[in-house]
Image (cartoon, rainbow, N blue to C red; front, side, top):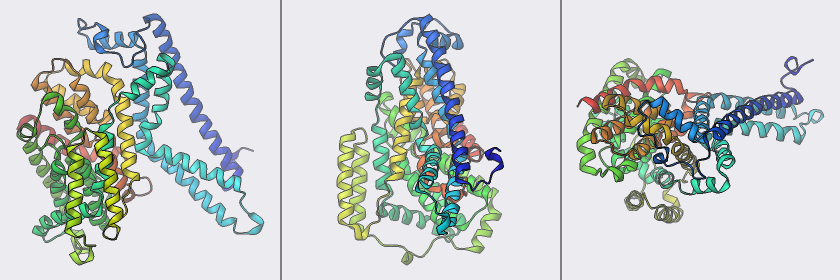
Length: 524
């Protein structure tokens, strides 16, 4: 008799199911990696060694005379087979992000089974052995970790590192990872932690509430205010901070009103798209702009004149469009519950503490490219929070650390993709380049796209504008498309039920505002 015919509450059966599932998953993954390594080894032997450095300098391919893109990419894959391995691993990581909901569902099933078994174990004659309890806890945590979308790219760094070590040696892997710029990841961790503090949250909430009062603080006015003022504030307090504040306000002030599933996803899509473009009034707020501004000499007046005002118009049009589409539901929500709570219901923070938090925020922004100064400032910030703890709330470090881990891992993966992104972007005209950058952003993070575009030699000004417009436009299509998105996902996931946020649901909800933003950037 097989385990499938047994009672699923049987611990031995659960153990067999978990072991079989993991064995199948692991064996298939190892088989795929082995096949890829064997294929690449054959190509490596045929094409010859290219040295121990990785990634390879694009100039070393000597393929400028090859105009047919597929032929150029195939030649580069033959010259350096590790290129293909890194890209396949990256594609598998992207596929993993679309399966995280299934892993979380499996984790919850183990937790539920453990709970039932522990309830049954209340009977002294049916005590649950510690070994079985630990076993179920382990698999519940294992599947939960596999379902953490912020950890996905970090998980897939393991096969990437193994591939680099196998082909290039330990020294090449250490040299590559050691030279990856993780300043942005450090910056995001610190800025998220500071912006999530009670004084900054109260300040932003007050500003947004004042605008919402123009519409009598109704759910619709609150919703419109958060999705308009919040993203625009991102140009000054940075996009990660704006995402954190807007997501927290939406979670407590709007999603608690229990809107329909369609409105939940529409709001999420607007939030991600608006945050992606809302930081373009300055040159230090949006991650892709931060990476490109220094290389292309873009300053604040340039960003405001070429991107910022167009982004503001696109945000307003998108919000009005969705408000018109859901106006009947907003009327229903208004009848059920008012929007903001009274000022007295909220915990007050002395203005002096708020000013000091703003100074810490300014310090972090001004020193964003100097991780040592950012970290030192953050340590002083934590000390100040501890000293004023009676006017504070605990600083939640887990979400910022997960997002920082996500971004650092993504940069490590993304830097291995320059062998194909450069040729693809360089030979495209303005509209195809913008569309291509938008699509690639959905699967590769807009900061990575912008960074790789800065490595393309001889990039025309019009092409630079088009690729940045595409990178910003596509930043709301998926959770991985923009560095602040995982923060919003982690804050709002609990409002989307046990299955969490559906990647397909987010994609469909973000399509309309994405098109509006793209047209605004390219036609205005």
